[in-house]
Picture (cartoon, rainbow, N blue to C red):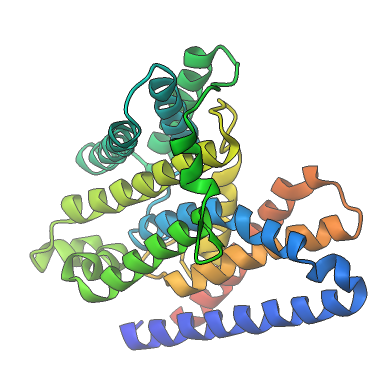
Length: 318
């Protein structure tokens, strides 16, 4: 399919998601009134979006490349544990954050290198990374919370910028920066070509290994940032942080227009997908549904999105 046609399809998806979100807001405003429209509820929805937005943005890069990263939730937890343990031992906040981000970059590099250099299936490699990192989290903490963090670190996420919570402002700013770069820098544009046809990209002189590895590094880096924001917001590190987050990230990215077969993805669509997933979960809770159904709902939405993606791909081939 021509790139212009693909872009038109993605834009249509974003418009559809935007209209759907508006409709849900309108219906919920009528049925639940002040309970749904209250500042507390809206703030809760968007506060929780800060982590999912970063993870889904990173996942979009990987999906564009035709891969998948199941380790993002564990990277979030592991970076959070490493950072909080260093802080508890008296290390400088800025240095600790740099170390935490460096750890996430190293993990992303290893994921990308092993997948591309040794042709390991992304599903298998990142599943192994997920298990290893999650296990290390429990080994390092013995299942206990890591508390006693300095106030300067806690305020990274809890503070406000122009009346907007820091974690929301930071997340949106980072995603906006990556979106802008992805539309301007040739290295990021090459990800679409690698995802569409790796062999053709290689024959065109594009290094698939470098390009693909960069995608995994960005994905892991954004998960690391989410880990720092989460531990800062909660004022502690916990081995179970990020559990199931990879499902929501994949669901939001695919709902937003990313294809599981690679070569497609749009960050505006991903952001709208994140909002839609969070909104549906909030609606479910508003009607007295159990919050424990959150993962199941994300899974159902992912299944529907993948089914629609397969139907669309089948129609395009015809």
